[in-house]
Image (tube, rainbow, N blue to C red; front, top):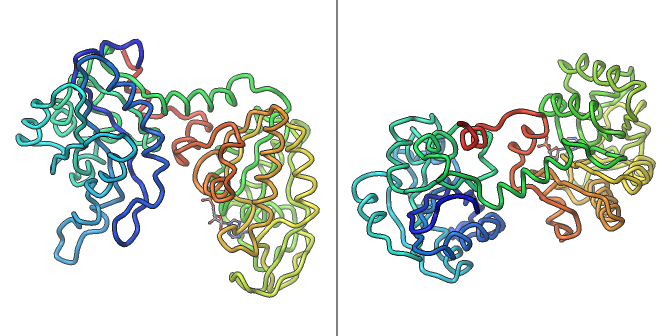
Amino acid sequence: MQNLDLVGKRILVRVDFNVPLDNHLNVTDNKRIREALPTIEYLLSLDGVSVILMSHLGRPLKKLLPDGSIDVQKFSLRNIIPELSKLLGREVLFAENCIGEKTEAIAKSLIAGQVLLLENTRFHKEEEKGDEEFSRQLASLGQAYINDAFGTAHRAHASTCIIARYFAKNVRGFGFLMEKELASATRLTHNPQKPFTAIIGGAKVSDKILLLEKMIDSVDNLIIGGGMAYTFFKAMGGHVGNSLVEEDRLENAQQILEKAKGRINLLLPKDSKVADSFTNDAKTAMADNMSIPEGMMGLDIGPQAISEFTRVITESKSILWNGPMGVFEMPNFANGTNEIAKAVVEATGHGAFSLIGGGDSAAAINSMGLEDKVSFVSTGGGAMLELLEGKELPGIREILED
Ligand code: AMP
């Protein structure tokens, strides 16, 4: 961004303002807005620049009103203006449609230092389709394009990807957030400091197969926890009771175990906190993961697993964490995830580089107030996952293309 020809221009910036709102339509978590500020403030510090912000908010076309119309009140980006303008310390103008003659007129009348926010790009079905004409209309609003929406960089949508084609290389680029996300991922994908430990958890093996396979090629230690671990135990001939198992992924689990053998240290949780139902106040016990009693299900990793995982994590120099170790939304099954968070923080304190891969692990770190004690918390769960799997992200490719 700092090498582009931006002075004196009207700059279109794709941000990720897809923030949670409460029933009164107030922003309940402003992290994504705060993360976009450095880019917006930098652009406004340049001579003669005005900024046009565009974003999506939720999935308005998937949640239409009973009469088939868009729930404008709920999905309008107007809802975030009070928070944005407070954080930015300036007035934010608003255009009720992200394209069209009226919006073009407002955009063209902007003077230096002004900020215009466009209505939700997903009010148009063309956005998610990556429609060329819609992209061209969006592009016509600005004279330069900056993409700072990492959370949607894995989608080839109009405002996140296709639009870049309408700007020359000297007037299109990435914002600071995008740059930070990419730099953090690169620290793990290109010559990470050893020992490198990946901690992969969450519900399903099926969502993370590619990541697991990729990690076997580069890590020293691969820790597998959360619901997905039980598919591995079943694949090894264990009895997992009522724990979550993906029967159609047993073969994948076996292949992953096979691939890891002799190459890396693959760690599965030795024990679990098991429960007689999927509720916070269920009756619980500790069990060995090869022999979970009938009728019980593993909902968190147990004390032996915590102590083994903690030892490996605190001795690591590079750490990736993606996915909780248990059903951390229920306080009685959050201990494993919390203890792993503490171990990652301890390792970071000793100089390790730690990347929290967005989604639920980011939520866990944030809820414990530890986000400043790890190296980087990604704002994009899906996008970070794809980046670490080695996939090309359309939003990034399009900017770099010749
Ligand atoms: P993911 O989106 O794949 O990272 O998975 C996150 C979800 O996995 C969270 O909602 C957790 O509650 C869930 N999860 C973690 N451990 C378990 C488990 N042992 N059994 C069932 N669900 C789990």
